[in-house]
Length: 440
Image 1 (cartoon, rainbow, N blue to C red):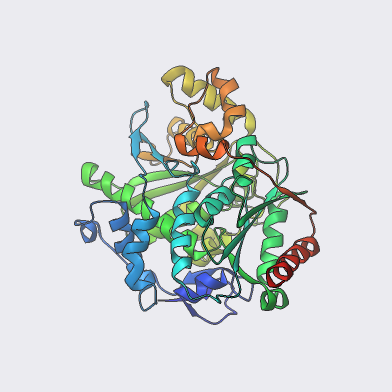
Image 2 (spheres, rainbow, N blue to C red):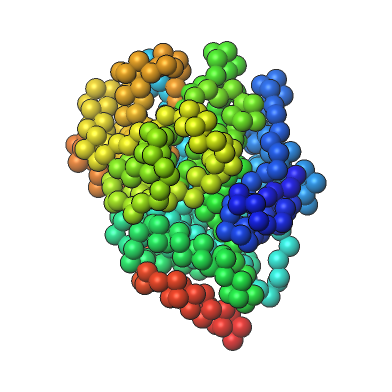
């Protein structure tokens, strides 16, 4: 399998080379030249998530040096479950993706990427610095996945004051080869700086850089696996496709669902829930796609005004009219998020993080408006454990949210983040200074 840029002005690469590059040299995102096709019986002998992942991703790893390691990589990465649980309301389900070490869905992709990167050839005298911009959860997942790995450094950029207190603590708690930088700006600023660094050829001649954001194929491809596994389990029981409501900011998780469906998995409709950042809902309502300044919300991991993976959606659906017809999208403001958290707990005892609550709210809206598929089975994608947002959730439900043991262990560690100006030159100087220190 070869991978090309969404912008069409970069050479095709094999998987390993695309993973190492992160971003294509023309500034685009890597996508597969072709998509394999499956049917549900192709997975009849796959008993768990790692085996589904190995079967699903085998064509994407074909003819690459990592192909023979794929099963081992999947089992190394996916050591926790992604259960599908019934909600109190009929035909509604919750896909829990927060059972990993940092209590967020990002653990799946980050651990898979780290397992791949460990197996790629590297310059033994030149550590690979994994650059990651985070709006809350990605950075902690990447930090946990790469912490202590020889030959790797991690630099996490996050918007100062725009993540929850527990998220901020996680980002700065790893130490050692993982450093957190609190940027005086937004997530979009952090993402811009990371993309500039990855596109800076003079910098990359001196500093070995890699990406761990959702622009990386190493993050995107494994996220297809839990959608495939969930849809297959549901199909075997109900004999119908499962529809998904995905809370999204940068569109990586949603695009993984879209790709799994495009490969023939029994996935029905896909609805995209955003917070008050309206770039996607406005586009799907008929407006031209236009990046906007991001707004700070209580669903902070989705505070994105320029979703990178929109390029991949455009690659899949180059006709804007066709793209708009494929998805429904809606914006959910903070007041509605709070109301959803409060009401669902009062009525059913359910507790959601703010991001999950956006998807729950959209599903309720689809049901009430008699949407075309409103009477079918739907799964809300729960992207983070509510304990990560205790300062928001607990006052709304008037109760404490139990902290998962893995999250509690991280919160017990000391944390530190370095202030960084909202300026690419400052990041560049820091990375070059680090390289000088490494050589001294």
